[in-house]
Length: 471
Image (cartoon, rainbow, N blue to C red; front, side, top):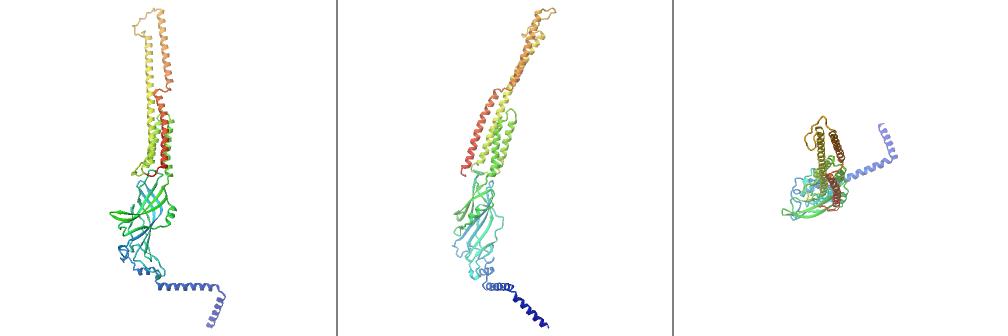
């Protein structure tokens, strides 16, 4: 009974698979894939296609001194040629006051290791593998201008190929010295060098060669992060230098870049020009008060603050005075001359005022003295010449009374003249004196001189900025 049920189920299942063909095709594909994988595995096992198989064939381990203790040549006269190439990714910073240059670069090096060689056919076509960098000898290439070590760890692996070539790729943030030419700051163009050479070996042991690559121009010009500086070009020079009597092979990369000057023009150069215009407009302020002098001193102090800011930017080791320093010193000098002229003009005007006041006081005192003498003569009976008193008699004649009335009339006339002098002196206070006229003439002449010299100075500075060569 059980056997009959089993046969029935078997017939039922066989009928259903014969009617459904699409899953059968999928099963066939899976079976073929599994079969091909098994064949590849059998071939791999037979051909030793693993990375470790290559390392075992080379006996490449960290304990094998053959690969890292000495220069990888079979004869000591053989020169190890190191192909070096540098890619500039971005210009991070340029510090003028410290004269340092901070680029972010990728460095590619390749050299021949004569102890490494295998046949790729023996290892299923395996041509390159990566190994720890500590297991192999590497050239002692240094950068002469570098003043700080790269804080980022180097790449821990290198590629080795079947023909013995070793390739190393490393990214670095360099802090290099660079002599800044700030004569045309902020319209300057800087050129900084990155020099590669061996720290110890001579050119007979290690020879540096530039590895040409089309990636250089594309990567450098297409750099998305240039910050304050615009990349212009990068050239290389192969040279042999003598260091302590030893000839060494070097490769020098010269990076040329241009500063973005718009921010310095808006935040520094234009304010100085505006302060110069404000100082020029101060000629419209009256010289009689102290407002003009206070205004000029305030403008002069503002320019001094900008000069202090400039002193924190520019290096102190410049061969020539930068044009922007000349621009600030010239503007400061013109403002100082204007301040001295204002002090002189105010001194002349006050001198004229003091002289006029002394003359008026002297004249008024004289008139008042004459008036007092005349009035005292009337009431005391004295004559202006100081004659002795004439005794008054009770029965004086009419002639004596007539003379007294005439004297009073003359005194009143003198009082009227004194009042007239006082009124005229007040009217003459508004009229300029001699020194005031001299001060006005000095003011006009200096204004013409100020405008002329300032215009010529600014024109010469800006023309020099545009056409002068970098020093």
